[in-house]
Length: 485
Image 1 (cartoon, rainbow, N blue to C red):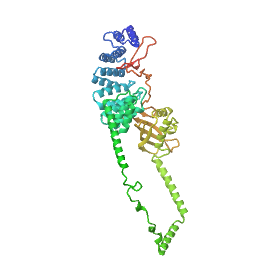
Image 2: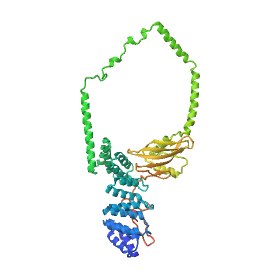
Image 3: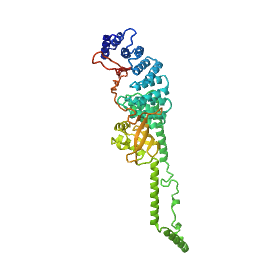
């Protein structure tokens, strides 16, 4: 290794002189020498120069240096280089291998690349699985993009209802760098496919309100179809209203002309035709009724006593069958409402949980959601339930919730909560850890050094005391890769 060339190459790389840096990284190696850092950063330089095939080869050289590590970042970079070079099958292999690296700190990048490559190859189902994995990855700071791509896959698979849920969930988790116009346009197309015309028009109007977003041909066709449908319905309704306005044959207070039939004749009341014997018989009937009303107080007391005994037995039975006050529904409703209001959530969480566990559960709950228990398995001391949460934008998320008795042993509190974003698998869990990050920030991961606009993992070393540690960062080039700083 030529240390002088390597240090000069690092300086040129930091200065943005990628052409010179690439040559110097290559010169810093002896023939046949394995030097992962030099090949990694040389690949990053070649990506920025648009030399994608050469960049893929450089990453392959870096992968041969097993002592260098960073397999996940290198494979993700290689997949992006192969995709840009047109080798989609090779890209799929590289991205798939990256997802299997358990030490890779940001696997959602590999899943996103894999989904895009598979979608280009026409494998929509597997692409949707990859996008869903990217969306529920806890290291993904902005899952809206992956959820939007998942919605597109659902729409292509003829599942517009699932596509609607994916797009609406994307809007609930949208960050400052996500394009809400594109998400609304996809939502509008899905709503038209599902027959929800009025909602579709609202979504398309939100997408095009600022006049900057241009709908795709399919989206424009769906928008035009929705407007034509509404116009036709309005014309039909106007015609029917006009016909009703000229119909003067019916009395609006008596449309069937039968009001007179309901007016009784006073002579038909029967009172004035009663004979004396009939009046005596009527009086006897009244006396029987009065006798039945005697001793009413005693009867009422006995009835109340029986009711109290039955109630006590019923309460005991209900307690053994898992009923309580507050109920499981009250506990989960109160927890979600407290998150929305920003109020204290301690009353709705199990007293056996640690403070960190309680914080993790609270941080995983989206604000503004309305929850309903759709299925529950309960017994005297513990219960588990399937809970459906309606988010503020209309999307739904299914949670698995575990309850245990509150400190007074009468009501219920939430012990654990796990969430799922889609129908292709299960979501993350919150029993002391958050499920999916809704952080809108694109700030770099402190452990990996990754930036918001780039996707290259860069590794820069230094031979002196101020050498920089390797970490994953993203470059700002149009064809970006994961880089380790």
